[in-house]
Amino acid sequence: QVQLVESGGGLVQPGGSLRLSCAASGFNLEYSAIGWFRQAPGKEREGVSCISKKDGILYWPDSVKGRFTISRDSAKSTVYLQMDSLKPEDTAVYYCALRTPYCSNIPQSYVNWGKGTQVTVSS
Image (cartoon, rainbow, N blue to C red; front, side, top):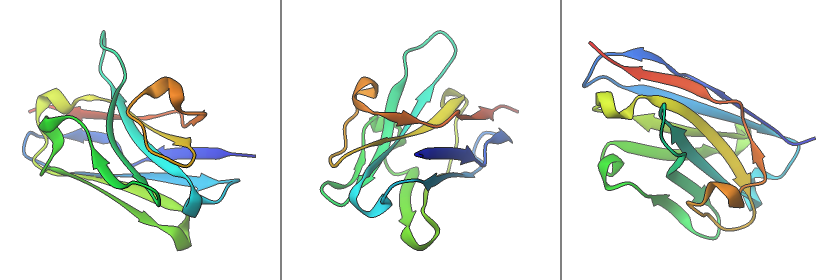
């Protein structure tokens, strides 16, 4: 059974850092694409980053490039999203999602989703 579980969210001050984790089970992480998405209140879900064997590493909003870093630990079946220099506009629920084999920034193209973790950036 495919399962994705996010963790690592919380409240952080502007300029701070968080590392989100996406623990994956029930499928071969090595041959899958794992995307990170976020959804702020009243806004559509947007793609943030993705990692896959086929595409490598992708970041989509210009606003996160240079601040967010995605990585994968295959031995732990976990994908991480390191978020630095956080801004209030990064506040959202962050989700990880699975598709194969390529990355996409279209949420509807992902098959499985975690339940999300809340990230709040506020002083």
